[in-house]
Image 1 (tube, rainbow, N blue to C red):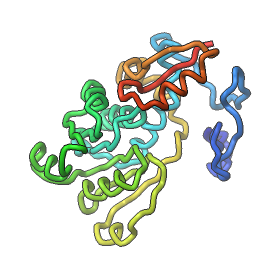
Image 2: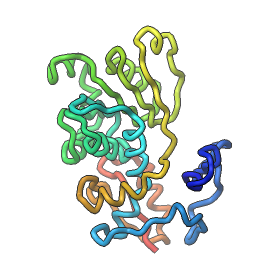
Image 3: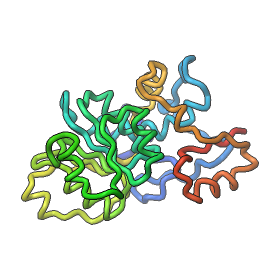
Length: 246
């Protein structure tokens, strides 16, 4: 939740966050009270169900917005889960010339292709640097958006980012190899959720430039909420987002 327009950014809070710096308790409820400056009208062209994914979409857009992406840059997105899929779309909005999606699941990579990825690499099928060399002619990229948050994907991100490149860690923070930062003159960013991108997301949804409907795997009644969580917890790669409808 961004700070009020006339307040400093340090006043920012994140609804439902457990982090002590940004904590704002409780958001899994039927109703919630929020400040007026973080409410937005849903465009007529965006359905209620599509708008329900605006928070996830805004995370991907925020990461792409704070990352210097020049026109025609090659951008690699590690992880084709919901946030990674929105990061792919956001990178395209920001002007990326070529987007590489990396995941170990073919079903997720198929989603990435449909949502704008130009190159698909299955990370379970060999060295990713070699795969990049074969597909785009060099083993590294200008920008890496890491959307998983595991030690293995972090190591992959270091390998893929070119010297002097940009690395944005959307996933949970893992130890950063500082010598690599120095030797390769890397610029690293750590985005936290979103910060005022909701309106832009809704407008981009209305324009069809950010697509949410393919990510809605199931719509279930609120009374079956526990079943919805259990369904996702089983890890079916075909499931991305389960919506609970009152």
